[in-house]
Length: 319
Image (cartoon, rainbow, N blue to C red; front, side, top):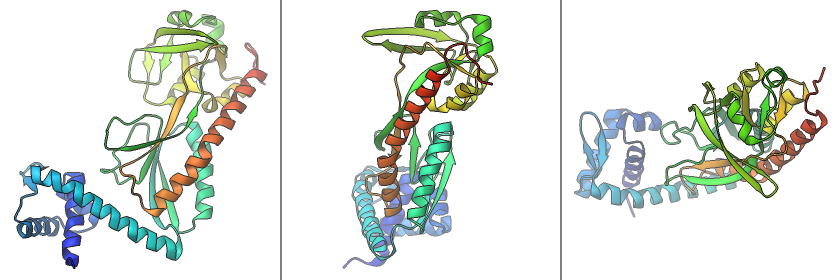
């Protein structure tokens, strides 16, 4: 039977290797850096193999460390899953669940409602929602999962598509009165576009039945937040692309109007991202709940937003 200390040291090694930092791993494990470093050194001595190359500024896995990490990670994940299964059987999912989410209106409204409903079903789970305009580092920042509109580029992350938000173009009535209303996507080149990305230009694809048009747009203002881009559009700074449900209230109140409503833009996917398929019970339960509910909620909200836009025809203004 393996020594309990050996199993503990394997888990310590995996934590250090995941974070590539003794200090960050020690903080996550709530133990002194010196104690963690000494345990790893003793573990390497017991194995007779160096797993980590250390310098004064950084650490790196040795070839043997890279090979062993895959096996050790699987062992630690299996042990965690077995432990969580026992805890779940005894009292259900429990513990702190950290979730990173976008600050968009759909997330603030619908994700908050769903999370509150989940919390009512699982009283032993404390859910912390952290709104971020950009992607987060799940390992470095200690998140259990992220809900995002951007598909991560890291091949090691596990990505689940759980829904999508329909998009459209919107502008303030005053802007459209002063600058004119485009009747075709190519006419957008004559307008100021508020881009929700860090760029002065973008290429957008529009479809209308069997017709597909790609057009390049530009503007003097851009930002990394769709909420801020929405605000700039409301104040007459230009036309912006937004999810229908993010501007539903603004269209209803006459602060924004749809632009080129007969043309469709690609929908924005919504993903759930984790670092592993082997998750603690609290994360698995939350993902199962959100995956089943979020797609339908976004679809219904998008239909309602489009219906609201149709009830407020071009040029109208709600009082």
